Length: 534
Ligand SMILES: Nc1ncnc2c1ncn2[C@@H]1O[C@H](COP(=O)(O)OP(=O)(O)OP(=O)(O)O)[C@@H](O)[C@H]1O
Ligand SMILES: [Mn+2]
Figure (tube, rainbow, N blue to C red):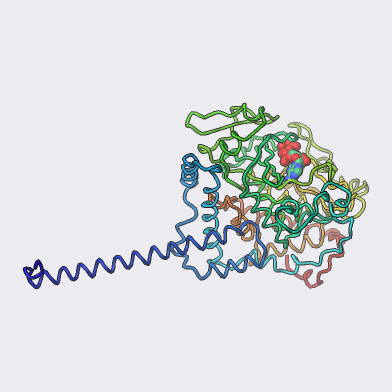
């Protein structure tokens, strides 16, 4: 009846309006579908994200390349504050038993998004690198006593339970321990590794106490199934450069340096740093409310702006002037997988021959004597086997990340002198990107020796398509904290390329003067790699 009263022109207008409204609804529906699809793809990639196997990696590339990345572009890297704020809001209002779990999951989606974009845009440098023969050299044959715990486990504590491959009796941390061999801490291709980092990044925190030993604040975190991790908190903004007037021994430790060092060491093919993963924790629910450590809980306070802070008790920077603060509860930390307990796998600590003086005025012997290495070369254990070139590998790693704090290194006692060196404690790396510290390379410069496989990998990493900065960017994007902000800023990544070139220059200078620069451990690769240009 209403319609009959309407004139023809008014009817057309209504028809047009109806069509328009229908079109808008259709468009809206399409948009919602697209968004939903993006969200549902992400958890998949995030759940396996933190270092994954090469196969998984490739699968994820193909999965992601088919998705339209123009809409997902906006997802991942909102300002850090926003993400933290959101997470905190979720945390504080959640009544669940483990209020942060949900937030961590959402965080995971953000990480996934970061990865999807990175991979859809360019071919994977990391994939190319890890597929290269130099990263797939035949492993030396391992016998019973080349495993840290396997033969020991017959008599010792690890074998008390009847092991199965069931995750309940064989949690990821235990499989990591059982995989430690004479020559490396883990096999990069072992899928257990991804499970270990996933475990550290997601398991419920059961305990948090201060870890003694060392000079700066760190916590020992425990998880279900007896897993443990060494926690280092974020103390300063990611991009803060170390004050030029601070001595290396006064520098803060950085949580992102611990994470980045693990990735760098893996990219160099060393596999000598225990897996480290980043995580956003809730300082209230996951430290303050569960800790049994009175010395720690006593140091909690609420800052003037309402953030929850603590400082613990230790030698350096454990005071209310140097608090570790959540925003208001969320705190970025690094979690390193713990090595087997010292009672099961005792370690030996070695003073580095190139240790700095740790004095504001004194120079160490190696800084005064250019032929210092001649003495070292004749001194056990450096006069035999791979110890000297292993030390030089460590110097290269430290130079690349600018770590001047390598006063000691450790080895597993069981393996005697024929074993790899553990690269523990990397918190003082990546402090400065604008300067390189040539003295860190002193072992290489003074000894003019380098493991051949190391040199070949370094050369590879300086080639387009394999570039170190690209591989690092991609590798670090797999860490959960990459969803908050990149773990290393671009200036730090370019510093890696610049320093790599500097290492290769030092080697070239050595080769101009000496004939026995490369140390050839029978590592089973082709002569053809020697032909690579520098
Ligand atoms: N992943 C790990 N598993 C087991 N023990 C570890 C691990 N990382 C470090 N440690 C042990 O804890 C000690 C202290 O750790 P770390 O060196 O990182 O702390 P720090 O405060 O920087 O020490 P320092 O002040 O001596 O440099 C190390 O010497 C090492 O023996
Ligand atoms: Mn340290």
